[in-house]
Image (cartoon, rainbow, N blue to C red; front, side, top):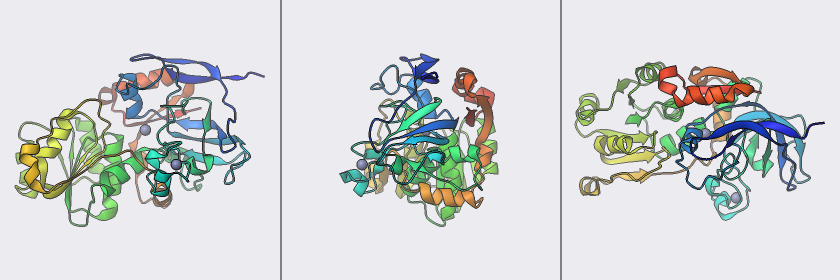
Length: 348
Ligand SMILES: [Zn+2]
Ligand SMILES: [Zn+2]
């Protein structure tokens, strides 16, 4: 019997490989081994590919999203058993450290975002999940396996770090800068809170058209006069909440220009370089600026909302690939605009 599996590894900036790796085994009693059924590629994986995460070690298996079947559990795992179908959270949480007790699972002392980052991830035939009781979820049959993949990361990230940190309220005017999978997830989950206006801002026409279908009231392309364009829609003061969902200096700059006094800028994007913070204009505006990594504390409620079809998440899934074609999938997602790619599902 073979003890190796296929996996997608990061081998340095711009270098990934589909290669043989050892099948993971239980290392601690709280671990589970999951046989992957579906995974996906995240914008964050592309960031790693481009060398954005400078502390990323070579040889790590990428991926922090997906679903699978529990193959084996350690003696300390109580909620799962062999054969359970599970959703894998992008965040690992021990449940007992200082940060877990504050529900800031993103900063768990023995977890956080470690899958496909500090330890081997989900773009593989098998993955070891530490603290399995905290990082795995069962989900009802009313959620298709494809859609379940969106609950690993993009939906909780858009909801928690965009919408909740941005404090979107009924009647608010909000703008989301960046119509990628996470921006779209913010768009979908913002509608739980009934904002009056949702302006989606992106360069890509296809993405803006999809945003309209998913509930954006207005769409705009960013440009020199973005402040005036937003003012035409919501009035000259700007929006109550600006959600940054890209992670590059220009999109941060848009948020600074369009937020009104007393408003919120919620940064969701993973930034790889510094931004120009216009404190000389902003100090007087009584803003709340938030940043963060997803905690996945709202994953259980999102599972419920998706299960009753409250969110048309399926429209985000644009491509399917077989696992052996994952390098081609990376190529498609690296050129997402050209390929009209939003969320890719990779079937094992
Ligand atoms: Zn992700
Ligand atoms: Zn913890």
